[in-house]
Length: 587
View (cartoon, rainbow, N blue to C red):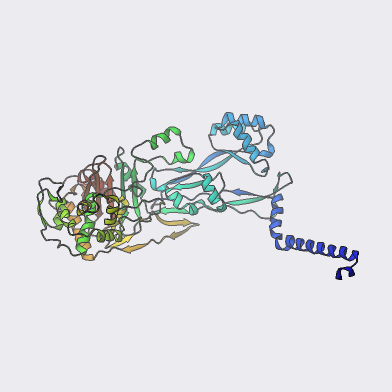
């Protein structure tokens, strides 16, 4: 009955009031709550931001020698606003560039509303083609030739890596970080690891456009932002030693060598062969060259210093020696075995590398002459899983966290692993006899062994290997601090290990005599790791000078044969170059 009190006019008035309240709320939301958002949308209709690329940072060696450069390059763009005849333009571009007519039409269509800025067509144009475009500017005023820059690598070194065109996947992930779909980006190595530091920050100009998107020129007022160049990197690498290292390694075999500063962890030189030409990845891969490197059985793309693992052979024996001394399982000068060329164990004969045997040996003797029989005896005393923990604590099979992004872990098995993978027989101590001489399932990288030998040299400090020494930016140095940890090895044991390395190179019966250098006391250990797929792998690991160690050196040659005959002489030449001396290439 109450509704009968209202007149018809009152209902209409109420409806008007409700509509007015809704409109008022709508206006409040547009102008106050979402006002800024709509303002930005409106501004985008008459403002455009034209990005300006920064100079990518340069990478230098420790003596400030550039390892790469930014070289001028020529790029072709089209100004959509100035196109007279699309058909003729597409034909002209297709005749002179590696692009099809249909692709030109597609580009024009995709950017038909982007008249405020030129569109990239090709960023690698030779001078003759650029001149031809300039000569035809009257006929094709929409074509613009710009001078830009691209990366040029002066040395073919894996650790540098390379830049390449950003992929669709990378662009989806990084477009919020000021990347465009025509940008170059670090793909591997230092170029990728330090991408954010090297790339710099883009600048921009603000232009005003009309309703059709045509440019009306720069907007009044200083709204432009200049690009900010990327940081320069100064490495720990000595390019002179790096070049020597690369030249010394065999080109017909897979090989790797690394020289590490055992005082800082800085990598002074690091080479992997065969190598490849990074510039081919920047300028556009030649199909024939790509087929050559991907079909090379020695895998040029793989950085074998830290991305490949191998059985270490006898250079692993120092780790075994450290373990048995720390656990007090043997006395270092106690005669433990009388080597007659091997031992019988579990119904199988485990041979020593010297078939006639080494006679009575203690631990020092066993390292000097690399007696396998002595280490077979140690294997009978070792608890596998406890030794695995010791290996892990020494970081032998762990990633070192070196600053080149990609790194492979080593491997050392446990009794559980054997039981899981060799289920028919499972874990037996016979496996440990192989592990004790660096054979069987144990795998390491050359870098991890260089780190371990470096820690023996410096008194037990495990340093983080690194290539970057400091940033150089706006005239200032920015030094980097790296992690360090302690080896689980007493000083007394470390001194014995250094003595054993001295003996292995300089004493009678030595195996590493070919690594000696005039005027420099070298300590080192040879390794020859059997390979069921082919010839023996050759290793040599060294520290020098023994009195006050500066460097650790590891040389690895896949299928190279004897560590004493193949790897040790190379290490001697490397160290001779470092110390400005001469190798002594006699046993």
